[in-house]
Length: 98
Image 1 (cartoon, one colour):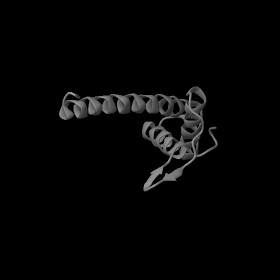
Image 2: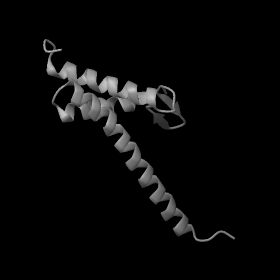
Image 3: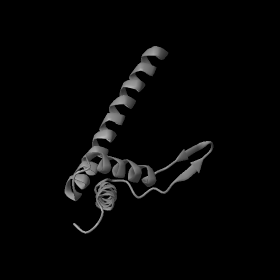
Image 4: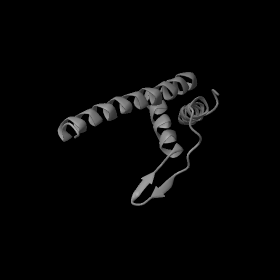
């Protein structure tokens, strides 16, 4: 891979990280879709995030691959925590149900 430009190597690391996330996850490959007024990017969003993380690390193929793999797992965990805290705040604002 030493003959390829660095941006190609980092992009390949990000793409493989995204594909590995899909393979290791319990979800299937979700294509972009439009539901009402909302656009759900599905795998395309994960691909963009993985490539972005791989380029942010900017070292070599292995580092790009592992950072994109771990980076999306970290982002997924942060998202779950934010959503759970948001749900708790909504329940607290709504008050007890009768």
